[in-house]
Image 1 (cartoon, rainbow, N blue to C red):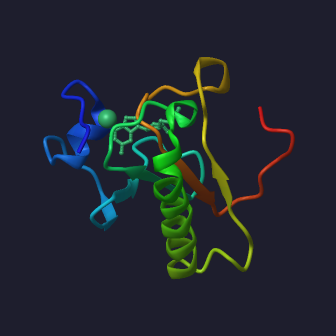
Image 2: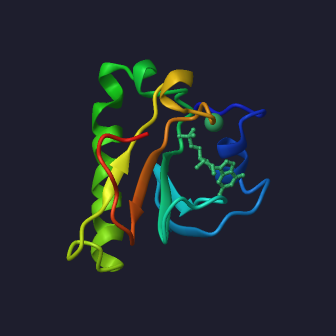
Length: 117
Ligand code: 5GP
Ligand code: ZN
């Protein structure tokens, strides 16, 4: 499994720093965002260190799909499908990415505007 000792999310995956983990399996982990931007703000993260969506390879396709499937299951568990939810992947500095370990944001519990800021 590809890991980066300097990466904050790899440290969470390897239990070097704490997080409020709500799902974990062989390939991915989901935990609550430290600085939530909505009443529900969960991050779904592959255990493999992939810097961003642009760095994914053909072999990562199933893994990325897995992240969305976990997000959907968390949304079901939390009853988010009634009002709706937003899923976001920031790719690169201009898009607002700050942690360069690929992650899917699951946001819900308020009304979101469009276009995004
Ligand atoms: P990005 O801006 O890269 O799309 O999202 C990174 C997210 O990770 C931000 O929403 C930020 O609040 C969250 N984050 C950064 N460091 C930590 C941490 O140590 N623990 C947790 N739980 N979330 C973090
Ligand atoms: Zn990492």
